Image (tube, rainbow, N blue to C red; front, side, top):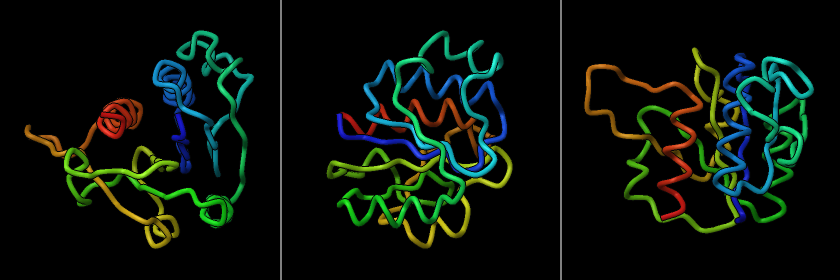
Length: 146
């Protein structure tokens, strides 16, 4: 599958591990860990990744916006998952694409949002306005691959 994931300053090592595990299950091409994201090997990542961190391809990039510029030059569409974006269930993606997921508190950074080809969100039907980043990632990739 030609879907990449860009983790934009995700602080929780357990969330990173969960993203590895979900990426393995859904056939993600590569994970880019950017900024403050922790990276394997780390016992907290391994605890939730359950080994997926050993075979899912990944790369660390200090600067997320430089990575995005590089990927765009390769013809990869940048899709940011952020509150207030277009309904992801109505979005018809073109592959290849990179899905950007953001920090647990601050979300996707402004430098990414201004460079994204599209900003999408998961409609919330309850009282909470957001989901855990790892859960949102799994839902988003599932919707993008239907």
